[in-house]
Length: 104
Image (tube, rainbow, N blue to C red; front, side, top):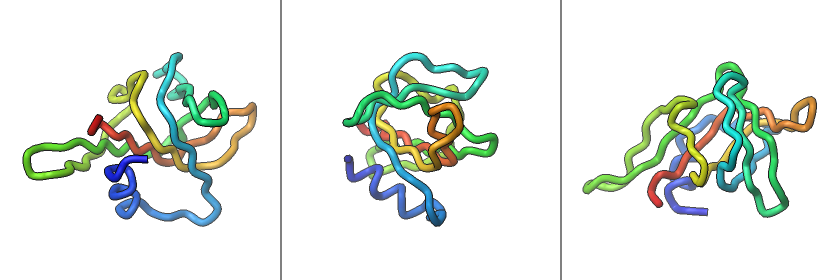
């Protein structure tokens, strides 16, 4: 896991009982259902964003890390992400927060 994701986690609310997954986004991404597949060390997992899910983008500029809010359209295959939420109905992980590491 990159230092950028670890740094962003300190800014997020720490909900009791939430689970965390990390990996890379893989196809398919479905903007209508706000879902995507996540390739993790233990296999691919379907991730569905909750209605009020937060998407946090971490990038870098000349002064260091930049953290900003994003939306579903900012997600793309190959991005490294950490998702926070709960195992959901139908096998999809229900994400309340998605942290996207754009630092490469």
